[in-house]
Image 1 (cartoon, rainbow, N blue to C red):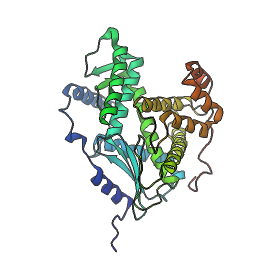
Image 2 (tube, rainbow, N blue to C red):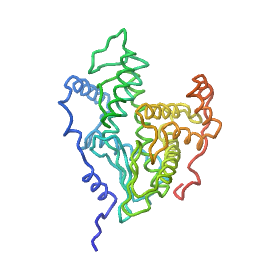
Image 3 (cartoon, rainbow, N blue to C red):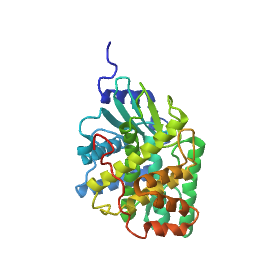
Length: 341
């Protein structure tokens, strides 16, 4: 009998072929003003020696490739060469990511370009709301006297578009200076968490059946899995995903995130899950509500007391100061959880 997928990379290409739904096929004409400013930013980076080489890939494909390379190299002692796993971008406008196992036992993880587009929009808007003067370009006309309120309206619009169409629609924005750097860091952490969550499914042995696929991040119900067990898998993947992310940040980004203090990392995740809640991603047969997921992760890693304070802070905003007033000591780690570690 001929093996259908000889390697994990072969299986990844099969997944891409089956599920591809190119953004380019439904996008409107490109925004020339936006593109001109973006191209100039790349040219400026090139002058500084920080050239972003696509290596023949689309921007989204290169981003996912870099995410996996960064995670794998940063945690090389943990992963080793034992995982038959391939990871890549899926050119699909729907907002999702998923992991899958082939009949031969190969694993593939894909992150949809639609998910990255949505995260990019929400991250830029959330940064711009706190600093409207950091906007270098906006495809909508902004009233400088009322910019913050308009930006909050844009954020609601993006969320409403998602609820109605399940697509990442909304204004195009470019930021400048430190705001652009903050956006880049926040977006990187959000995307890396998605990848770590999917890897968590693989490490936890959730894909044991032949040809099993687990759709993730938003509200898709995985086939071949009972609803109660699906919820348990999502909680477990979230928790292991956070541990992977913490390990990655400590080893690869020590200058960006202070060692021994997880407050900045946690703030990025709180912002992400707040957005998921605003998008209307509350509860499904397979996924707990977004804010419940966040509190479950915090309890698993940092303990019940902090998780309870975080949960209560959604009723009493003053409690946020209790969470972020003192350094957050890193809690549980990956050590001893898997044979890899």
